[in-house]
Image 1 (cartoon, rainbow, N blue to C red):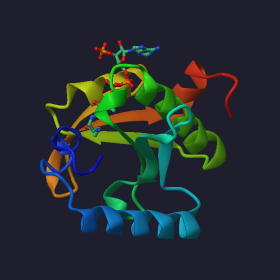
Image 2 (tube, protein in one colour; image 1 turned 90 degrees about the horizontal axis):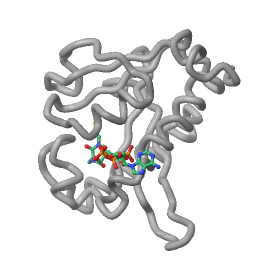
Image 3 (tube, rainbow, N blue to C red; image 1 turned 180 degrees about the vertical axis):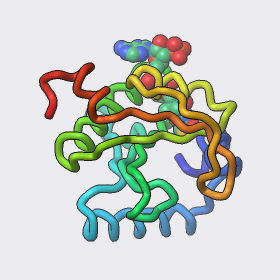
Image 4 (cartoon, helix red, strand yellow; image 1 turned 120 degrees about the vertical axis):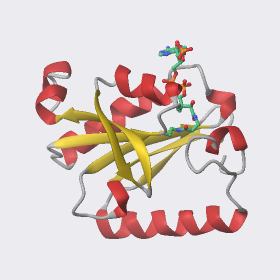
Length: 154
Ligand SMILES: CC(C)(COP(=O)(O)OP(=O)(O)OC[C@H]1O[C@@H](n2cnc3c(N)ncnc32)[C@H](O)[C@@H]1OP(=O)(O)O)[C@@H](O)C(=O)NCCC(=O)NCCS
């Protein structure tokens, strides 16, 4: 996925090299071991292939920063509601298992597809902020707001 320009367009703006992807995989493995959360792979069991990936991690990669939720899908899996379905599962993990007080999501301001996933999850637009060395649109969801939408959770 990382080598596809359409996947990376609003993330870094350029395709990843194999070495960068490998380094990211190593980083993610280390975080699972150290923190117990990081990026998941979304597997299509019918075709036995990766459909996408998503994360609960810290903004700016610093543990004293708030938790961030994120997603990306292989283009073969766009337009089917899978990112939104995964977002609910990952948010449930963050609020129930990690007791997160708030969850943030950041996107390139032109990334409308991702904005829609954030809105479907119930996130509020908070404004433009500097994260990851750039200005990003920030969306926010508090545990109290989540509990109203998902009363069975928590
Ligand atoms: C962001 C990204 C994951 C969104 O993918 P997506 O397929 O649009 O999002 P979802 O999986 O939630 O699917 C929603 C779409 O599927 C449609 N859909 C079809 N069946 C559906 C179902 N059962 N439930 C919900 N939506 C459904 C919706 O109508 C919607 O399409 P629309 O936006 O044209 O109305 C995808 O564009 C992507 O991977 N982009 C590149 C990486 C990226 O930018 N990641 C985010 C960085 S901030």
